[in-house]
Length: 625
Image (cartoon, rainbow, N blue to C red):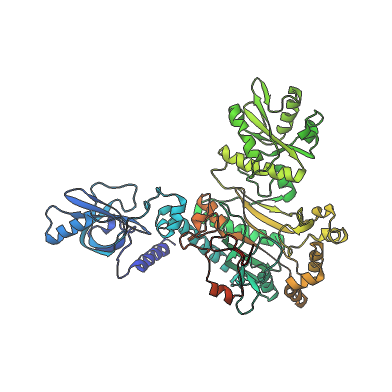
């Protein structure tokens, strides 16, 4: 194995040899001393030391120091010295010279034991002064970096993120290929559907007034591949959603999309848990134990969120029974009162604790109000002390002490109230926020499967049930009768369980999927519960239901968010670092300045007329006002 590894390393080195270089800028070591070599790269910096000049030459693989002697140099050597000392940052340069051992070695650089004494230098391309420093820590804001993304990619943090992404995709292809998965592309121009997030749409010139949609996922196509007998499919695929953006969202993102035939839930979970464990072991040296499998209902009751971060405690504490009857309207009128103990935060100043009110009631958490209780060594301090006594506080703390980690002197109990599901969700978000605030989410990896989600969720705006995942997810067999027998607005439909599952790592959903419906009659029943008429269901998904009549196998699958997965492995906070050319928070690519207006001739060709001008302002109407 060692010999094979060495042979592979030599093959890689040989592959990097070109007409412009014999070695990369990160390759040379003490064993190369005495060799004549040629390297090419970008000038990281040049320094004139009066008797000689240094140039640090950089490429994707590393940095090598090149020295240009002045003392004792002939006419050609002096010309090289003059050229080197005036060399600008990011010039593209080719150097040939002899490898020598450095006197002052640089232990922080892999090539730090050697340097090249230049025998020739050629400027392959000059460079304007870059708008920011091409260094690990740069002086540019994010807008500038995105405008000059091609320069930002030269920086190690972005370069390394993209190389990590490449390693992940190579491991995925290797793992799935070894297990008989076929990588198959699916269409990018598809049909718009009303379910899920907003589609990006594309007008059809050849079919005036009609539009394609860009896929939010290849969901129906991968199911059709199972009907077609492919058995095991995967694809590393671009997907598109026209939704509000944030640090972990982009309008175009990449999924590791997978589907399998003749499988049940356990088969899918075991196979893809194995894939993730192999990726983390290869890239992080981290060995996961077998993933815990947690019911959705347990996740919500314990953590208030369907993607809990298990690296810390802070479990939810239900206080409904011990908090009512004290004429405190917030608690008395609430269906559900819940607390959360923050270890050590009871020592915070009252001013700092009060600042948590804004976080709790802000858009990110969405609670209506916050009550806090400081547990001190000599007593209690509460933001609602007009209504409660020490006797009440003791009951609250006793409840909190039933949870892992407990609650005692120096701790802070945070409490919110309201409708059960909404309040759980708010506290779950608050738990993530406070975990970050307390430094509990910085290190390590914890993974689990959250399984058996509700099949449906209620949409207040449309006053109907919607699919929590998508309408092709199969309900558990035991719950089918309940689903089809109840009125379509009966809230007991929330009890119907989907055969669905999410993989969660460090409080982030990195992948999710389900066992699919493969029977036409059941699919029709699900569409009916979701409020589709038979005509609407046929118009939108008739092709899929028709396929189910020709012997569709049982099948299941899932999709991983490649960008999010890389963010966790790479220890970053934003997926943008792992996307070569990302969009900003307004969905704009400031480098190529898009989206942009198109010409009136193009609009006419597409049979489209806009109601706004190029600046997005409403066009003035023709004629008299």
